[in-house]
Every structure is written in structure tokens, then in C-alpha cells.
Length: 319
Ligand SMILES: Cc1cc2nc3c(=O)[nH]c(=O)nc-3n(C[C@H](O)[C@H](O)[C@H](O)COP(=O)(O)OP(=O)(O)OC[C@H]3O[C@@H](n4cnc5c(N)ncnc54)[C@H](O)[C@@H]3O)c2cc1C
Image (cartoon, rainbow, N blue to C red; front, side, top):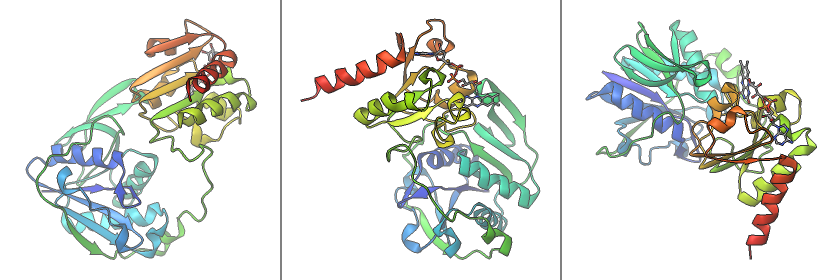
């Protein structure tokens, strides 16, 4: 039996959610082979380093000019072709926005169901997160291959396996339709260079910020802490911040060392995106706000006073 894992990577390194997907694949495969596939614009991009330690036997590096940029349908055709060639019993991807998109394309191509955001799998039985994290669903998926994605940060990526991953390069045959769907231009994120998904510290604002301008002190604090700026959906709906900043069920899922939530009530759909945070500091005017039930620390007060005061204290404490 072979379990095939789709790896997302940047600058030659595999992303953490993909390594978490490998860990789930190992538990599903037991003694059988875990193989991986990555889409590479050229051979220098094959992210083989350290994969053996995670338990990957073979890395299939799919080489095509289309992979110089993100091309979800092309990646999906590649995965479907390879899964067929290997006779894979399961195909697993990271439950990131892109991972879910690619695996959804694979499911459409193979006319099979996709179980998204799983936290465990055994045989055909999967447990997955539903309703923004308020429900764990146990389901049986009768499909071959089994297609699933792994909820980011629901389990830790494990190392400790012996061996080195063999790299096998191949060129997939892609349809014209596959090449039509690709990223043609990138706009710089408004997070000052710190990626929201990977940031160690996130300072986030909600409706309590009051306006787009109300994010000035939040950006200032984030700058002092080398943090990314996040926000709630109330904020993106109001047009104060772009959707790329949104934390939550329909935004980015984050796992920082500390999450500083300013003027955010803590709706279930928001908490679904930040419950991977190791610590939460809530700054809220309402001592009964739901977020206080999840917060490790809280400051009850007006964020327009509290946030600048923290920045001033940080500046004063620095040489
Ligand atoms: C299908 C679905 C998906 C969703 N996905 C998401 C998602 O991905 N992310 C998300 O965030 N939401 C999501 N939502 C919306 C979610 O239900 C909430 O409506 C939203 O999170 C509320 O945003 P908020 O906390 O900023 O605003 P509110 O709920 O209005 O809370 C504002 C908070 O600010 C406090 N406050 C006000 N003024 C101040 C001040 N001056 N100083 C300090 N505190 C102050 C208030 O006490 C309050 O607690 C989704 C909803 C649905 C139905």
C-alpha cells in the first residue's frame, strides 16, 4: 500500500502543515510506503531535505514550467496521474487554502469525495473538524483512493524516522485547461513582510477598532513586536482591512506563540482560526465578552487607550 502526500513548499523548504499531513499519512500507512509529490518549476526547487526523517520514502518531483507559479488544476492533474500510476490507497494534502483547493480539484477529476480538515484517519474512518471547530465528525469514506486534507496545526509534525527520501523527477502531461488556471500576478501582503500564517506573534483588531484608521495603533504595536496584523471578519466586511488579514473559519488559521486580540468578541468562527495560539491576550471593553473564556490574559478597557499604552511601555523598556 502507498499513501501519497501532496507537499506545499517555498524556497526549498516544505511548509509545516504539509509535514503535519505527512505525520497523519504515516499513521494511516502504518508499515506501508509514504511517498510525496511536489510541484516544481525546476529541479532546484525539489524540497527533499529532511523528508526521510519525517518518514517519506520517495519524493516525486513533478517538473513543469506551469509550476513556476501556483496552478491548482495543473497540480491536481499531476497528483491524479501519479496516484493512478502508484496505485495509491490514499492521497493526503495540507488543509491550507491552497491544499484544500488542489485536493478539491483532484476529487473533481477522479469523481470521488474529499474529506477536508481531518485530524486523524484509520482505514476508511476519518475524524474531521466541522462547523468552525465546534464539532468533531467521525465519518467513513468509501472511496479509492481515499482523499483527505489535514487540519493545519491539529497535530504536530513528527520526525525520528530512519532513512533518506529518494528523489524521482517526472514531467506530467497536462491538459490545456489545466494551464489556463494559474496565478499571473502577486500583490505584496499588507502585513509588513511577516506572514500571518507563520507569525510567532499576531496583533489582531476587531470591530472595536472602529475604523480603518483605528488600525494605526495596532500596526504600530505589531511593528514593535515583529508581529503580523490580523483582524476579524467584521473588519473585512467593513472594508477596513483586506481578506488576507482575516483570522478564522473563513480566513487564515494561525498558531502563534501569542495572539493579541483587540476589540474582538471571540465568536466561534473567529476562534476556529486562532485556537492554535499558545497564549491569547484579549483587550476588550466588555469583561463578559466570550473571548475572555479562551484568553490566558486580559486587559479590560478601551483598546484606543490600552494598545498605545503597551507600545509606549515597550518603547520605554528598550535601550
Ligand atoms: C459562516 C461564517 C463564517 C465566519 N467566518 C469568520 C471568520 O473567519 N473570522 C471571523 O472573525 N469571523 C467570522 N464570522 C463572523 C463571526 O460570527 C463574528 O460576527 C465576527 O467574528 C465578529 O467580529 P468582531 O469580534 O470584530 O465584532 P463584534 O462581535 O461586534 O465584537 C466587537 C468586540 O469589540 C469590543 N469593543 C468594542 N469597542 C471596544 C473598544 N473601544 N475597546 C475594546 N474593546 C471594544 C466589544 O466589547 C466586542 O467584544 C463568520 C460568520 C459566519 C456565519
